[in-house]
Image 1 (cartoon, rainbow, N blue to C red):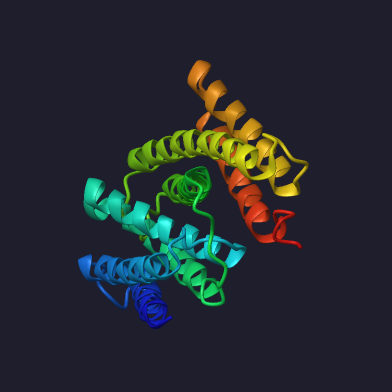
Image 2: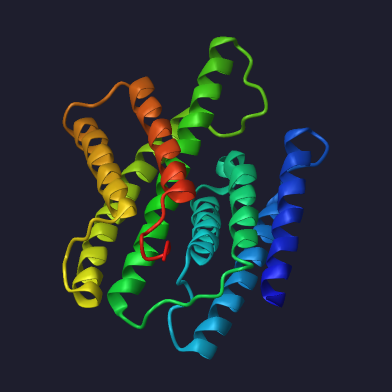
Length: 257
């Protein structure tokens, strides 16, 4: 747990730093991403410690999944910073908040997962899918305010070019759909080996399938015909809310026992 406490402290400092930078009290710089990187490293150290002690995948309950998801968001954001440099730093504050909250929820996590590789692939792909889709929703949210500011001829404090936000929105959406597809595939294979059936009437599984159908519609229509940017952003943000609903309120029946 010591590693998680260090991760929490660094994420908290990152949240405070991003807040001060948005308020103009602190210059935004690489040191904020360094705090996020430090928090992510300490989470990985705790992840590795549990794996070595238990000999199983460290994630086996909702608390562990929230922690993994929050840190996957941080990882994807840091990779985006490497790819696009300072131009994506407007996403830093919500990512730091999700990293802190996810790691905090991971403190009471006690259950570990299974040795079955399909379970590992299922949880990892689900975490990446939700992380990508949440980043897509955040990009859509930022895009809405950027366009509103530009119409009012007031660029505000946003440093990301609007063209980059649109590009990231599409990339995050498409990537999230790919990993959501893998989530269902690996989940089906794990269910077959663990429960004896590829499909079970599980509330979270049903909602995840619903999310897959929802995003399949968005991604395919956008690729074939091209949705209007405003409609794409609205659908993306609604999906973001559905993802949060799925994470916060809907649980696997196996966890409810």
